Length: 201
Image (cartoon, helix red, strand yellow):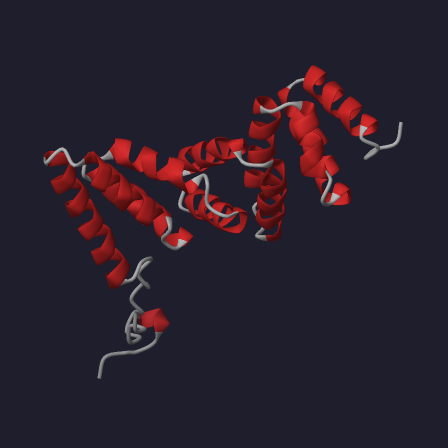
């Protein structure tokens, strides 16, 4: 019999478990069908129906977003992915946060940032909810990106509305985000927070 054991190189190979697929077969099939439908609709000039398909896709589970991005880009439908991201920017706060987190986790930081920037047109209260949801999911970087986009695009008075639901948690994050933009932006935000009585004078 041949020598056995690791020192002789004769140890039986340990069984290798197949890597779990990142997406189910159903997810892959649904994404492929969506792409095929969009290609057909675009070829026929049926823009309105294509938009409906993208709106429906934006409502899919957030963890499917990286797959949808990959499939759309692979098919040369980058513009459709951009439209899907725009629709996703108006998802409920928790789902917006989950979609941003899924894209970031998949290494799609550019898409994550675009989604968050587009989300800043939402009411301030919804931004608060999204920031808190991101923080609770361990996505502090994405929470800061959302706040940074907000303080650049909206007024200091709007930013005060973000802080109101949970000043203890949100004020420090808001000030950090404003400081990262500019000293002037931080100063204006702190002044607005003081006027609103959220921070002491």
